[in-house]
Length: 456
Image (spheres, rainbow, N blue to C red):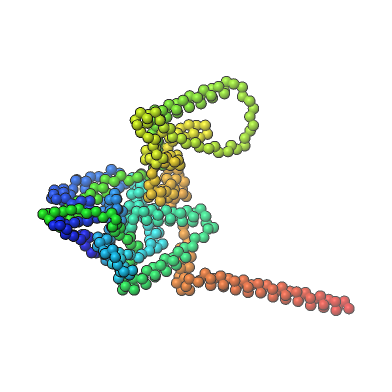
């Protein structure tokens, strides 16, 4: 791969260095020495026991909040560096890229076999973590699988959720047919198209799926002014070392979201909410005592009671907010407190599952939302004991492979050939039935004529 160092432009006796791969350039040598020594976290055990893998830093996102936003480029296909691609001339011809390398483009496809390998590894890691540590984390497992297959954690989460939905269809709806043969045929055709596209440039297509590098946004490019008194090359090296050190600190110090039942996550309550709960309990107790002492009137028997509504409310002490000179909180908050739930005449403190169904729910975690159903099914299996909620289903591989071989031999119209053959067989069967009926009618007619002749 081309050099990742950006171009330096001299201006008024100074050097302008784009701040694309690092935050800033330091003129001291102590930063590189501290980064090389480390902070002693290499031998420090992780806070969470199920964290057994040590991730390698990848490419930062644009906001520089996630050092594993994109995996490192580990493909044999050489691409132009992100800095050179960002610093290319802004004016050019419509076809200025002579190859995919210069255009920083990769063509690849995540086929069904790789998706099944991802899901198989996901099930094995989840079962192993549950048996060995008694705790699991979907967020951590997605990072492990993404590092192994060299893809993003978001793509891994989407693949796991897709395969989980497919396995549940195979389990719960056996009469429903999944067109696996057509999916294999589509994978085959797309890969052939990618090979043809690369053959035009006399290049070899990637053997497996490859994530496109993150690159650099030109609109967010900033410059750091460095005097010519300092060695720019040495500053760049120190900055790269410090950048890797910061990424390592952020990766090793991350706390992953554990798989916990949201129904058991309580919500904090203030003194006012606790007073409301106590007052409601006292009122319910006094009402029950009053009903037991009075005469009971006969009531109509109800065969089945309809389900009742669940009411959720959040209490806000406006007087306290005025005293603190604060405005009312917006609906989006990451600290949903003072949430009460009333259901079937019972008032209780809300939990995280109740809060997520309201307008003041916390800001959504995109990755958690992506594999939300798979995570819920895993909790149904481990917490609630529902055996068929999660896991793989038996699959008829012989039929799928046979259909795919027919596709390779007969082409994409093999289904039409089957339909034509079935239609021809049905026509032949109908014609045979008509012939038998006609022969039967002729036989009965001849027998009746012979009987009349005998009578005469």
